[in-house]
Length: 61
Image 1 (cartoon, rainbow, N blue to C red):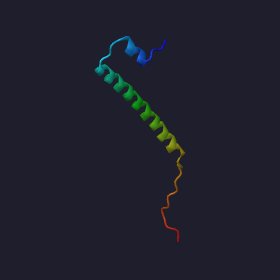
Image 2: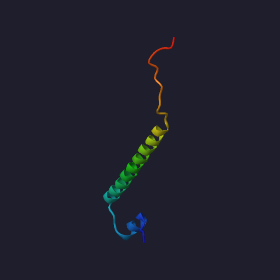
Image 3: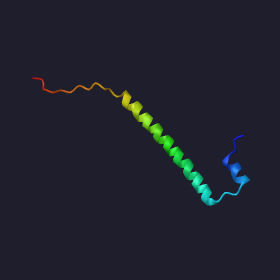
Image 4: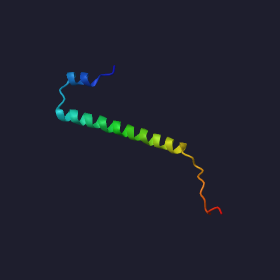
């Protein structure tokens, strides 16, 4: 059975410091997940850009 955060609060007394640490850890984990998703999206976007760029070495006369 999965317990919710609210259930845990009712079951045992958690100090404000503990709540801050718990919130910080969850926020940090969410930030890491979002950074990974952003990196994947950037790679996908980069793969959609054309790779064969034409470079003119000489001006046409």
